[in-house]
Image (cartoon, rainbow, N blue to C red):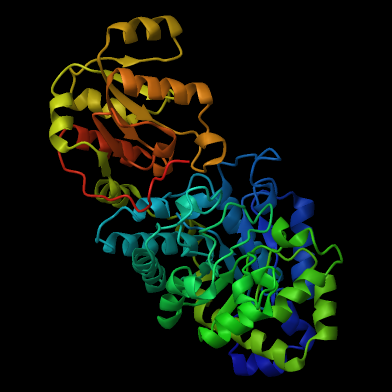
Length: 538
């Protein structure tokens, strides 16, 4: 692995073509074929791309992420990722800057790796931001173990739209102060270990009902309103010296002199608002340029990449037409503009890439963090008593009750833990046995209802069918129900919980979260988390 030259050395050594190549960060896929791997090696070697952004597979990345193509899971993904990074670095003339989206850990892209809580879970914690700092440190170490330098996180979008199809659970919440504080703790944790970060999605993707992977969201707010709210976390973190800002694909006319052009290719928004008005001097990276919010409108190869660079992006993420775009930028851009972006990118490389990070043994590279202890602490501090009180839960737990989960799950650590803590509390019911289900419900009065939504995103009612939602609401209305939700708190918008004895949001179905929820039900601690979002009815 070559040492990163100083910018002074690189400035005089690299040709204009090589400097433009450094602007590009094409996608790399952990589960590519050998043919596809060699094609990317050729691209790296011939066009001197500056970095790679890793995704799990072509079927799961960006515009295909909603399941249009079958995703094949690979138990050895981490080992493959590490080996590919080593392989791609070897064919690069200059060290590659390796990036990934690891908002809640490598598990966001790589199976069988440590998973930490979603941002909305962290948003429920009152104080105790040191837990988020520690999470940032652990995620940084995991990334570095694979050879990754840059985590394209955290999301600092303020999620003030319950119908947001893509940000929701990835946001710390709807309060700009708390979003800023928690994002800063996360950034500091990663920076403590030397990992680069990127706040996103500028100028704010929280108040949208369109997924920019699929279409162009319109944010029709005044500039004053955006400065007061959406832009607040960005400005605060910019003032703290954040490494980079990712610009989203959003139409924000009030920031672009009335123009509806996407923010990712808007000079007014990037060079005007972000650079000039907000004073950001670091690296600007585009959101994935293959996303349909922008890609479908620019069929000429290289045109979109040129527009993104000309608007002020230094790094062109998920560029699909590198060869053509390099030629376009060399032909249309000034030497000064190229040099300014090249300098920012190269200085970021100097900061992040250390030769020792590529000299560790294969054994060392597979040592990943153990999330259990930290997840247990976060689960306890984030658990929310959304309705009722601790006395009602204690009274309920002291008598016989039916344990019911919807849908039924094989890994119900919540009920398993309760069977150990409260062995005489009652029975669990398999809802797949319709005869037994109907018979027991006729006679059963008290029900501990555990909800395990099939998906974290709101599309299709979080994976619940209309019949299931109807059945859940009927139970709440007709029985004495104690409800524990292991999922997105926005699920409660679909339910009538007015007659529920108590409602607890445990956030996630991770084993540690389920076991801590059982400890709460058993009276071992009191809930201290608060909802980070307002649960308005749809």
